[in-house]
Length: 302
Figure 1 (tube, rainbow, N blue to C red):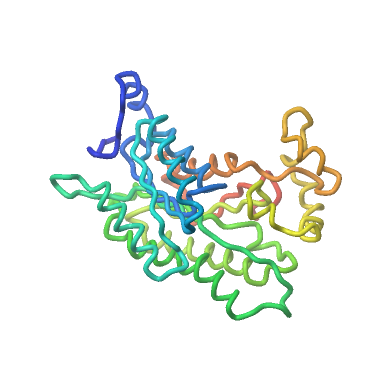
Figure 2 (figure 1 turned 45 degrees about the horizontal axis):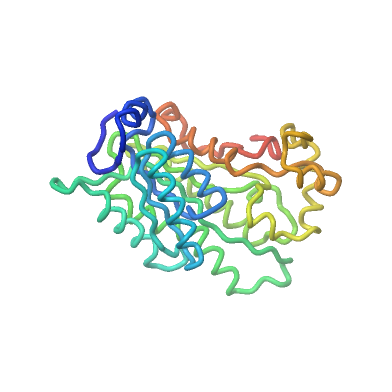
């Protein structure tokens, strides 16, 4: 696998030797929502495999944690990481993320710049019954969750590979197909993202594979903000999911305490990141247009 100068910052002979065997060595990945949760976990996984990263984040409060994550990944894995404040809900945000990545990672002499991996992870959610849905909230969620990935792909298109080696992974959700109460908007945005995944798999067939993953409940801020009533409706799914049974002494103590109410444990962010990373490697080259279950059996693929 070729290495593009300027992407790696190896600091020792041992680090360089170890890096030579990494499957994503010399690749560049764009990860939106990269400051925390699943996005940060994906960044850690891809960095450990040798990929350099451009991490998009939105709020001022995320600036410091994203900068710390970037510094940690650089020192631990000898790769280059750029943190970019770019709002996926702003029409100019996606293009700003791509242009910032180009300015940072382009070869200093030839100007060569290629984006190998895109992980569309940034998303927002707010549950409400249909009678309470407001146009403003509809537009907010669809702008970030659906239009944001479209605009990001448009900005990235000139820089995708031309040999099918590119990888695009969209973070969907079981909410796209299970019809949870209160998710008229959010579930719709994720269903739209899955439809876009199939379309892009055809349109970009000579450039990149395009797949989605559909996590169920994951121990992130978004899941933590859901109501007890919402979590209660998921209990039967949790109880029947093969991998979500709580394991005392292994799983987080809070999950053990909450087991009676929840019916099982949510996923860990690194578990979702592992599935995403599988779709980013060379071995996934014969998989495209698919929704891959990353939910412990919360929902089986049809």
